Image 1 (cartoon, rainbow, N blue to C red):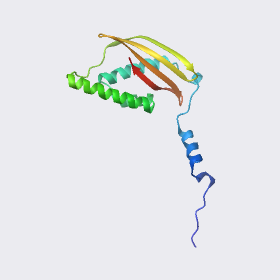
Image 2: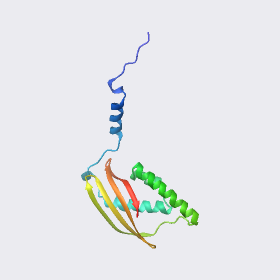
Image 3: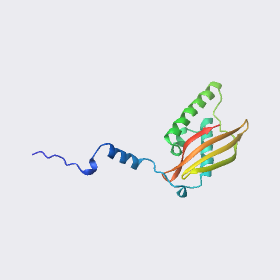
Image 4: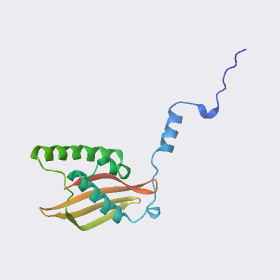
Length: 146
């Protein structure tokens, strides 16, 4: 005699169950009070991004500090920078720069918008970043080099 497997209430499928699971496993917002000071993170992430553009650091090394969208945009821009260096015949060398200033503000809880000003031998640049507190740490959701 064949038995039919019983279905448990947890094994239900459908849009409600899938939505509940995706919300459960998605990154969870962390309040600002539970997050560390963002300034050291801003300095280190800026340093890493500049090293990626110079070709001395892999983009993958920054992946844990970026959201997926920010990671993809950085990867695209790093590939363009690598092609430009290759076309000009310029080798990848560690950038020499000075962090001039870090300005940040918090427009909402667990959100920081910042500008890091960097001076190299040739020119000054600004790196604009937006951080959000997720899973107990800061992650960059947007970055741009101006």
